[in-house]
Length: 311
Image (cartoon, rainbow, N blue to C red; front, side):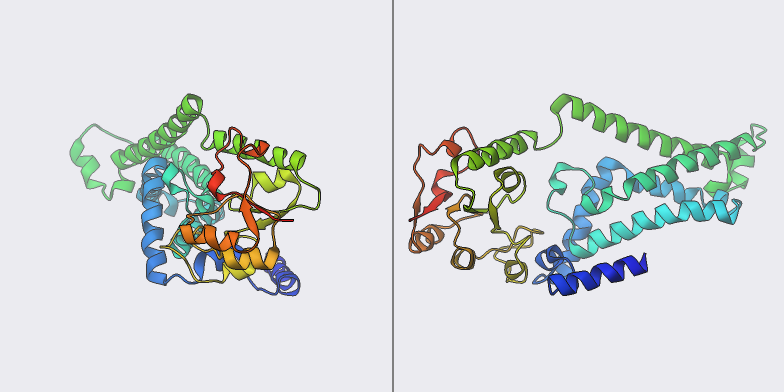
C-alpha cells in the first residue's frame, strides 16, 4: 500500500505538479482548522443519528470483555475494518465533512468504510450470541449485577446484541422503505442534467467549449470540452480565496479568470451570481442566449445565467 501511494504521489507531482489531489486544495485551503473541525463534527452528527453507527460503536465497546477472550488473530480481523471506519470518520471531521449531509446519509468519506463496520457489527452479534449461550443464569438479578461491567454480564451481552441487531435492522429497513417510497436522492436532477448534456451534444459543434457549475453528467453526455467554474478540475480556482462561508467544494470561483483564461463558447451556469457578474461577463463579449434555445426547455437552467460568446 505504501509503495502504491508513493507511486501515485510521484505521478501527481510529475503530471499535475501537486502532491495531493486538486479537490483537497479546493476543499481545505483557505479555511481555518477550527472552522473545518466545527463543521466536520456537526456534519458527522446528523448522519450518525440516522444511520446509528454511534450506537453500533457503543455496543461494540460494551462487548470489549468478550473481545478480550477472543483469539488475537480473529480479533485482528475485526480491528482492521473498525480502524478503517474510525480513520475515515476522523478524516471527515478534519476536512470539514461533505456538502451533502443535508440528505441525512453518511458522506462520501464514511460510506466507503461502512460495509466493514457492518461486518464487525454482525460478527459482534455472533460472538455475543455464543457468549450468551455459554453463560449460566440462575434467575437471580443479584448474580447478574455482580458480574458487571455490562459487557461481562448476561444482561449486558443480551443488551449489546439486541442493540446492534435492532440498529442494523432499523437502518437497513428504514433506508429501504425510503428508497421505495421516494426513490434515491436527486434522481430528477440527474435525469434533467443528462437530458441537457445530450441536448448540448446535438446543438453545439464538436469543438465547442462549455462552462458549468454542475461538472458531472452534463459535460459527460455533452462530449464537449468542459470548464469547471467551481474548481474541482481547475487548480487556479482550487487554490484561490473562498468567496463565501465554508461549503466544501462550493465556496470558490472566479468568473473573470475562468472566462478570460478558457474563453468558453457557452456559459451554461453560474453559482450564486450577483448583478455585477452578469455585467462583467457581457463586457467580455458575451450575451444572454436566446430564450428559445432548445437546451433551455423543461430544465433547471436559469436563462439569466446562460451566455453565448459573440462570434
